[in-house]
Length: 253
Image (tube, rainbow, N blue to C red):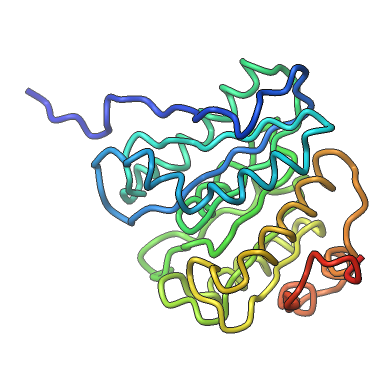
């Protein structure tokens, strides 16, 4: 018998955060973190824990526009080398959104390995924007081909990384953002001073920045001044923009 190289179970979408909109005007797919290697099925509760608060905030912010926010439940926990399971599951999830809701704009929001998956899957024609929070990109670029950036042309891209991240090197996401900026001017990157991989120390600021970006890219709301400045600034300034403590307060507008 030939051994299965990929899990046979399928990915699925979690229920919408809050009431499902009567008329969906856009969708956010939340891509959780995970280990580099594991073929075990993720625990639904553990998978959603890291993105649950962000999902609730986004659903509230986009209620008037009919925003549907779902967590993507992967087939298995790990990235698993060339299999890149979370990236394929993210693409499936975008297709599922199109099947359910029709031609609506989609934003992919990923944390850790989910951030890497979001960057990979950003080339789907329904995806308008991508948020990668502390993305875990390959460390050994000699052994692993550099992540492609051509799929992000025409998308708006936000990367956020803590400067004290011990699990995902922030310099890798900076170099990745530099590569994207060469083919796509609509990319910016914020650095969260002293924060670690989970971005918990400034979670409210990170959530506010993410919400600002999502509402602007999906529904045309005006960006906050820091986001405007980061998108307009040439590298490296727009790719090393500090995320100020208290971001999201009225005086940041």
